[in-house]
Amino acid sequence: MLKRSFRRLFLVGGILTLITFMSGCSMLRGPVYPNIIYNNRQPLISVTYEYGEIEVRLPLNYIGAVPDNISFEVYAQGDTVNTIISILQEAPRVFIVYLPQGVLDIHNKSNIIKIIPQDTNFQPVSIRFQGILFGRIQLPPKSIQMKQLIVFGKVFLNKNNSSLSGVSVSMQNFDNVIKETTTNDSGFYQIAIPGEYKYAQHLRLVAGNNLIFKPFKQKLDFSQAFRLNFNIGVGPSATLEDPLYLTNRENVHFREHPDIGSETLFLLEAGEAVSVTRVTPGEYHGSIEVEVGNKKSVQMYGWIYRSDVFLLDLNNIFKKEGGDDSEL
Amino acid sequence: MIQNYKWFLVTLLISVNLHGQVKLTVNTIPKKVNVKLDGVIIGKSPIKNERIRPGVHKIEIVKAGFAPLTYDLLVNPSQAVHLDFFLNPIYRIKFKTEEKGLVFELNGEHQWDNQFIRLDLEAGDHFLRVFKLNEIIDEQTIHVDEPKKFIYYLQKPVSEE
Image (cartoon, rainbow over all chains, first blue to last red; front, side, top):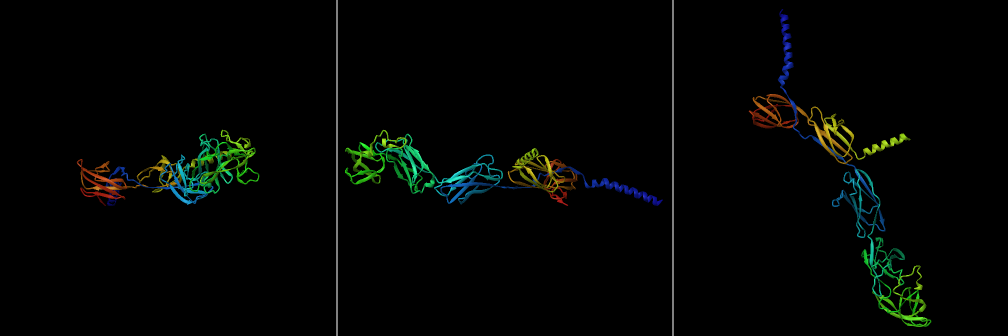
């Protein structure tokens, strides 16, 4: 009996303990607030970019001469003040530069490479190009050349200082014509030749090849300048008096006396002017102009065969087509 | 012949599509968390070799036991971008006081008047205000960096047990 009561008591006690444990335990731990409470603390975030490289290749052609050093400046996004990179190096055949990804304008040709040769004889060059996200940009070859050499001026007639249009003017190295032009309506001419001739020793300006006069020839020296101004007078000067005759062929003998066997003072080129003062059945006596330096000239008197000259007509001073000026 | 042509087109489309994209890597602590990119789940972390276009993107990471994370990322034109996220954990905190008639408020919005309560708090600092009869009687900052128990005594700093 006692044993049974004891067992029942133990059972009730166990059930009560279990109930207490199941329900009361959570009450002992207290209620839970229904929401999570955030403090909006900035979480730790790490962002790392991996940038690729953009390789830009620019082949360079050097025309005539090669500068010792070249400064390359790369600009992006049309900003010509702040360079992305500036490189000074010996003149390369191919300029190669590596740029960080994302610096170039990939939509427009607003990226610029400035090529600045470290030599005043050369002209700086700029190249605009469109960028890419990453990879290689192969640009078309660019020519680097010396500054152009320019000669300009007016062509006029010595006799009356009037401007002459349509007169041929050329630049020659030895006898090779580098460039040729003709004067405009105002008698003005301008010729530009590559800078590689800057130190050429046999560079000359020739004017009036299409005139009946002896062509004007002047040696040019560009070693001190890139532009030269030459006003060119053609034909006989005003000091030679009319009537004027011109030699009609090369190597015309201008002699001291009319006699056969007389000493030849000068061998005249075609187109040289003779101011005739006396006439004989076969010869003319007159004067020619001889340059004595410093652009000064003196008159020399002598004799010349009539068959070697023709009368000058200032209204028709251009050679006829075909070059046969003996009929003039 | 036609099949080859199709393959060529497919290859061309894939290469055109891949061109201009940035390689994306996402690591998180903890790992194996679903990562959403612009609202689309792209997988569980760590994520490697995902492709993303330059521009603005939204990254969302949600995991139970951690504060949800939303991050607006401006992806620069680059070869790859690596992202590491350290999620803020949420700790179970027990808060107890012997004082009676007090109302507690955390971060200006969460209130209770129990003497003993369990709270789920994001790691970090929280601002505690104590009211009595609708008047502020105390203000404190509590720092949560692990599961712990706070005991509040009037006008005294909250003590940790």
